Every structure is written in C-alpha cells, then in structure tokens.
Length: 467
Image (cartoon, rainbow, N blue to C red):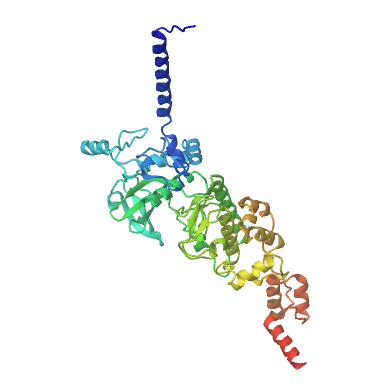
C-alpha cells in the first residue's frame, strides 16, 4: 500500500513548526530579566557568587519605578508593595531629590550615557542621586552640599552632616574611600540600606548615591541625638524601662531582616541611632557587613564582646557560616551592656575568665551565678541562658525577647530604715544588688556567706600539709 502525500502537507507542517519556534522566542524575550533576579542567589548556571554582577544592575531609576535588578526577589516584592507610601514617595522625598533641570548639553550627555532620570512631576533632572551601577555620577560634593561637621569615623570611612543646597535640609552623608572600598561592596550596602529602610526601626536611606574623586557617597537621614553608645552611662547603665524600649524596637528590626533571609552581623550601640530622648524611637543602621543567611564569609577582623563564640573560634581568613543566631547573641550582649554599663566579657572565648564562668553556669556545670550577673532576675537570666547558648543551633529566635518584656529584669536594691547606721545602710545596699534576702540577713548578723575561692584553696592546702 502506498502513501500519497501532497506537496502542500510538508509545507504546512514546516509553517507550523516555524510559528511554534517564533512563539517560544517571544516568551523567552519577555522573560529575559529572570536570570538577573536569580544571579544574586548564585542560581544562574550553578554559580555561587553572592554579589550581584555590575552588568546586572540597572541604570538610574526613580523611587516610583521598578526596583533595581540584582536585588533579591523578596526585597523587590517588599519594596514594590511599599513604594507608594509617604516614606518612599512623600513630599520630603520629592523635594530632596529634585534639583535644577540640566541644559541642552547635559540632556544630550545623559542620553549618550544611557541614563534616564525621569520623575512623575518633572522632566529630566540633574541630580546627585543615582542608582548604583557602572555609571555612578561623578560630582563635586561642595556643589550640592555644605558639609558642617563630622558625625563619626571608622575603618569603613566617615559620616558627615551636610546641608542640601536645593532643599536646605540636613542629611547624613556616608563617604566610603575608594582606596579601601570595592564598588560591588558599596553597591551592596547602598541597595540593602535603601530597600530595608521602609521599616520603622531601620534608618531611612534616600535614593541619593554618587561618587567623588576619592569616595563613594550615599545619603541617609540625620539623627540629632546621636547613637546609643553616648546614651549608656558607664558603670551604671540605662533604666530598665529605657532598655526594654530599645531592645523591643531592635528586635522588630532584626525580625524584619531575618524574615528576608538577611543577617546584620554588626549589632552594637554605635549602630543604633536615637531619635527621641525617651528612646521611644530608635533605628538600626550600617549594613556594610549584612549578608544572606547561609552564606560563607571569611573572618577578616578581630573579635569584640558582641562577636559570637563560633566566630571567635575561627582563625583569620577562615570561612564562617552566616546565621541569624549571630544577631541574637549580639542583641543579648547589647542588652547586658544597656542594663549594667559594662561588657560581660572581652571575648567570647574560653580563655576569658568571665566568659568561662558564664559558660559553666549556662551549661549547668555549677549553680554559682557569676557576680556580674547577680543583679538580674531569674526571668531575665532565663532569656540570657537561651540567647547566649554557645551552640548557635540551640540559640533562641530573636522573637523570644517579646515573652519577657512584661517581666522584671533587674533586682531592686533592698531599702533600709532611718534607724540603721551608715555602715549598716551601705552593707544592706551592697547586699541588695548581689545577694538574696537570706544572705543579706546572715551578713547583717555577722555570718560570712561568701569566702574567696583562693583563700579557701590555700586553707585546704595548708591543712593537707599539716597532716
């Protein structure tokens, strides 16, 4: 049996195949931006890079336009939901980002460089703001701002208080020197700061980023009251009510970051800005060390009291896993500092005497509570035991602090009557801060309840030698 195929049927099949291929190419063209979204997570072609390539970053964009490429999708979605709020598109934002319209030559130069500075209520604008891309605008700082004074300085660079010429408003400009800062590190810090800023307890970062001859610069809101470090009285600490107000707001900011799979990694008083004298409004800042949860980073600097033990144990240039447990540890240490005005230890290392004493108590190897922790109530110590667990996988979540906000955290000093002598009054006051009521009562009757361990060991040695 023979099959008689006409000439038109193969041609028809070829036409159908061509139309199918054209349809597939149209779908691919419409989805061409998807690889850029996943490159940040290292899912593009099996790569493991955590830094968005510069080629995947968009040009200058308006706050009301689509979010930058190279930013994690969860941050892009969050910003898209909040971009219409007054904090991102309000009058202050529009006033601060609006500068005089450039002339003909400036507009031609912008078109030539591929930048599109579009705003909803104006045409093209010459502005110091720029999206972080390969083509940061090279500007002279004094042409747009009057630098009044320096607010802070560190290994990263410095922060200065500046007044904008156009709006006559004060902003904090963070200057990162090009000699010690890579462009991709500046891009990451600016983008993360900008997209996390909608949270009420994270410092506002404006869409103002540019470069000078020597530095990369971006703008943030100014805090007139400074940072939390200056608000903690040394050796005394803050009141319990103020400490609760601060830690509640910081926990909210960290919850928000952790929900976006981001870890701050640098919680300390210097990175907490104070906006009200009663501490009802504080904000977290400085996201230069922020990384994605689960990333591997190299240890490049030394340890401070806020550094968790898993990082202290690592040697220089050793890879360390980034987890949200590091922020929980730092928050608990910060809480201790706010309530006491002291550090609990110098380093979270077994070689530190104070840290070793706490670990022995934390692991229930001894019932003796270290002296610097005796001012806290059992409920407060229960939180510290959970938040300062040496094993990061056993540490509690940052939301755990909310369970203890209604409890008392510090022991009240024991009050004395007017008939007590000065010596008795001083003895009772010291007892109230370090011992329970029974120990104070025994000490008032001349019964010593505390014996120095070295003296006890010496007496035991002398007794053994006398046998």
